[in-house]
Length: 252
Image 1: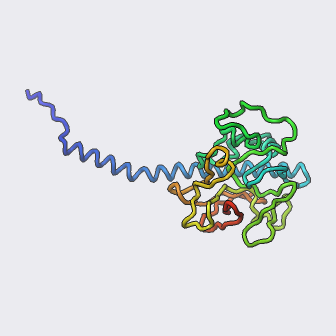
Image 2 (image 1 turned 45 degrees about the vertical axis):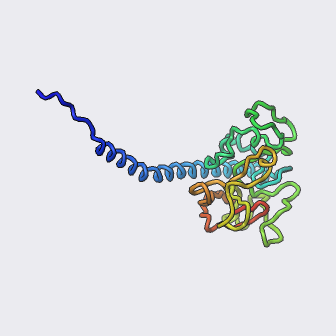
Image 3 (image 1 turned 180 degrees about the vertical axis):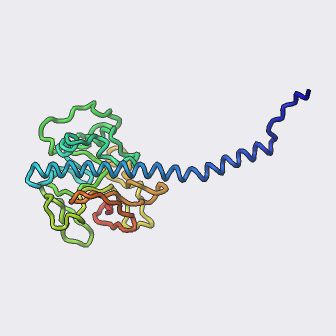
């Protein structure tokens, strides 16, 4: 009896490796697209929850929306506002888009930004103030289109004023943005701008750059989720977005 056991030849092994590499090259983009689609859906659900909570707040406060008492950029939001959103169905994850790895709900330096904590501080290890929570603010992953108590001091390029929303009652509620995916750049030219290395407060404190949500191939934005004042949610492709506020350059 012939006990010789035939194994793979070198050529056969190379062919198998080449086939596996080819399959990986075909499957990897599809897997990446599936992962990004899942993140986009999670992000959309975050905005839906925020929209529901803000409408509940309005229903309890004569249609008024919560207004920041402090903060600078559009993604700053008062502790008191996040308290209400969490009490009506949200949690820390609700305030961050999963497509941005530089901003996560477990980063105390962002979640407790106005307390100016040292880099590396663990979440919940430093107590938050129990009073005057409207004057403390968090850095989130979304642009909040609500006005502030003292009025926002900046406006979209080329316009003298911006109708930052204060109430749920608006004659153009279906086209008035309420909360938007953060999309920002270093310069206004989308062809040359960086959407991943924008320097703001996190850079000056800890050398952490700001970046946009939903980047395609890690460079340019694909678009943004938007919750409108009437409560409906929409995806806006980046080709339909414009520079609205500077500096840095905010898009929606």
